[in-house]
Amino acid sequence: MSAITIVNLVILAAILIKDWGHNRVTLFPIVRPLLLSAVIVPFVLPKFDAAGGGLTLEAASVVAGIAIGAFACAMLRVSVDEEGKGWYDAGYAYVVVWVLISALRQLFVYGCQHWFTRDLGRFLVENRISPAAFGDSILFFTLSMVVATRLGILLRSRLVAARMASAVA
Image (cartoon, rainbow, N blue to C red; front, top):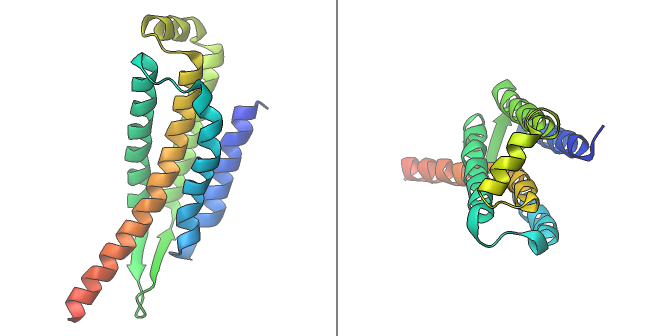
């Protein structure tokens, strides 16, 4: 089993174990992916492409991760109890989104290594994208998806709490 497969499985398992069921919105689970990103990204930055096609690919992967993270967040039911505490419920739709994205990401990586290696190499050369930037873009996609989901949970719980407060007032 390759290292990327293990990382994909660990991320998927961690998200599903933490999110499955009825969970309270607290600060640490929201901040945890931000802290994780703050630890991981500096190791990536020395090979980070600051210009050209690599930067474009890395930025596009962040945008795609945010969009899919927002979609995953939309699969959650967010509510606020009588005390004003936020809760979210992750059901089968949320699990399906994460499993599908993880499987597609793994399939893409496998395809890059085995099916369309030559075409990928040509694409990278023609667009002046370094292999490091290509790898970074996969990492940035994953991290931005997780961060977007967490921030979406926080934002949605705050919006529901504000609606409840205005309805009561």
